[in-house]
Image 1 (cartoon, rainbow, N blue to C red):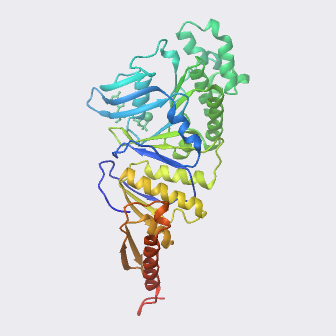
Image 2 (image 1 turned 45 degrees about the vertical axis):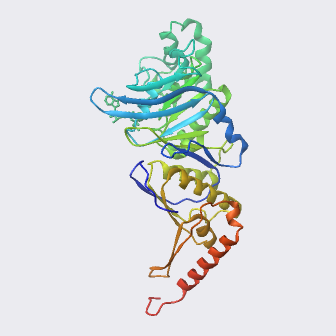
Image 3 (image 1 turned 90 degrees about the horizontal axis):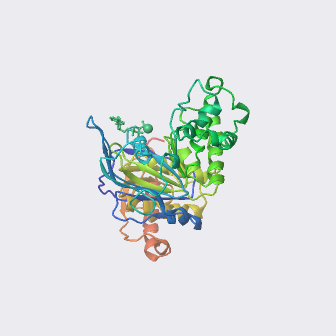
Length: 402
Ligand SMILES: Nc1ncnc2c1ncn2[C@@H]1O[C@H](COP(=O)(O)OP(=O)(O)OP(=O)(O)O)[C@@H](O)[C@H]1O
Ligand SMILES: [Mg+2]
């Protein structure tokens, strides 16, 4: 791996992953607009081919006090997808949701609905459900009346009794419909908030860190509930979270934003089937996504694939090469595998035993690293030279501490 400059975030990151196999991404910083797929799953292309329900193009938002929250944000939300938005605090995630919801206007750029530039007929507040970070319930009103609020605002509460009951039932609170918020737990309040967002049967559900303040067990339960709702009702969900794990667990696609002024840094397609288990593959996806969250220029990887079987490891090697090319980042990769180091690297540093120092360096000058390279005589030659260098480095040194 080599060092090249890249205009995105300044942060360097330590990345120590366990296992994994499916991951894909695209960088807004690279020249290529191709989505590279790090998965064998043919389903990966499915959500990508859906038409956008809404598309933000070159959107900027500067507030009256001069704060520039967003700059050149290009974001497509595809019909029926579960999209998560990750990014550092203050990068403009909530601002972006508010723009989509029509609660605020962009300073620059366009927000296009459907396939055309105009909002589709019938688009209105009832087509969007918004779950805010705080449940924001009316304390003086029962669960039922809180959930009924959007219908009442539309003057349709009277005809909505069935809808209200169905929305409350969906979030498992039928037995609590006459209860006031003060008698509900945090998780239950959030369920009410979700029911309130669903009661108008919106096509698009915008969720701004809805589970951030909850304990992990409640959060996991609500994650599963939300996935069931999404799968059952066929909604489009845009889900803002600070939890990389949650985003990987829930989403088909993750958009990672840069620090403020926010724009898209990279996209990750998560192709794993639902329900998702905490497998080694999942942990690897979480680790990779976590490593990319701050748009690092340098990626430090400490034997990330050591515990994987060879097939998965080869696949992740290819994925990593694609990622390195796409994001143009510097990668420092620690490995025990000579073969892996030759396959991945533009330069290999061989260290001695403790106390460690550099024993030798080997430049690997290969333009294309793919399956053909792995079976070539050139690859075998590099591996032999690297193995010899390693053997030499392992020879005991005179005067070295035991
Ligand atoms: N109404 C406003 N007036 C002025 N500045 C604002 C306003 N709303 C947001 N900002 C600023 O815009 C930037 C983006 O805010 P936003 O709430 O969108 O961030 P965020 O990504 O949602 O952050 P967090 O993860 O902490 O929720 C911040 O610097 C914030 O201070
Ligand atoms: Mg926010």
